Amino acid sequence: MKTRDFPDGTILLKAEPGDEILSAATAEIQRRGIFAGGFTGVGACSEAEIGFWDGDKREYLKETIRGPLEILALTGNVAKVEDGKAFLHAHAVLGDRKLNTRGGHLFRAVAEPTCEIILRPLAGELERRMEECGLRLWKL
Image 1 (spheres, helix red, strand yellow):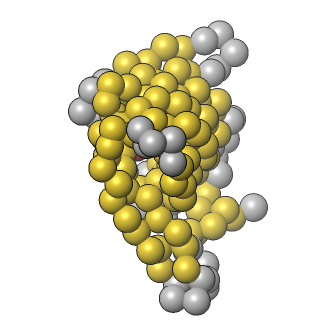
Image 2: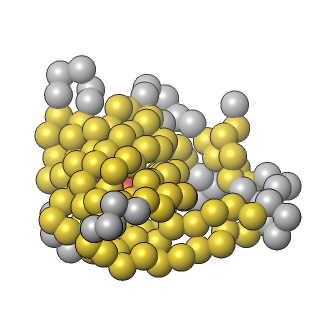
């Protein structure tokens, strides 16, 4: 993953072909010690795993989608979880060659050829903790 820093603190992250987007971005964010912020992105991927939270079952219903896929919208936030590591909470809308779209919580996506992310870090830390509902939620 390539990066570029701007004077206002914004960071651009560019995934390379074959990068697993979230793990590569998480590694860079962890390396920089960023534990609060938001991000948006666009790009394309060869496959992705998305999910829908089923509150009754208290689990994600996951599906792997094979590409090529356009990443029409990628949005999310950064926080710190119980083990002290950065966690990216991401949602995505993906489009296929027939112009159909699918979306949900993004668990994994393999860049092909790239994903361009605009990260806006916040000063300080935001924590996520496991709640009774079965999700790690912001601790405000």
